[in-house]
Image 1 (cartoon, rainbow, N blue to C red):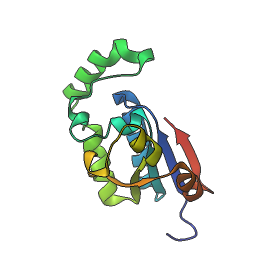
Image 2 (image 1 turned 90 degrees about the vertical axis):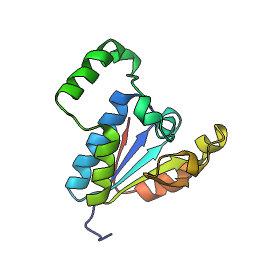
Image 3 (image 1 turned 30 degrees about the horizontal axis):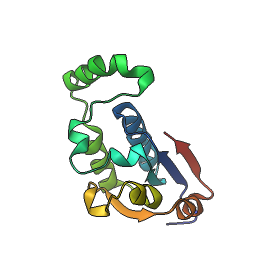
Length: 140
């Protein structure tokens, strides 16, 4: 990473489709701008990345759950790519890393191999904060 490359970090603590899509959209924008981007998955955000769970997850956050059905229908009708597909494509073209919170992994007895392959490593919160220093951090 060059000295000029800016960092953009996202703490994803929600596993709902609307929040994950927002995090992935922000990741795509940051990566397109050449920012070194990290998504830190913790608690329910981590659960959204368990193998296969993303394919059946239709949950929206409580404030917007009444819009879940219509939103999913609209996205399907307009052929909006699934957030996982978008994330995979962004990871191929940008400097994007997805990390799992070690404490959450221990708490829920999850191993790295239980997660989708887009998650490359397990790290602690202190390491994540250290790596994020000097850049923007977004909580979703």
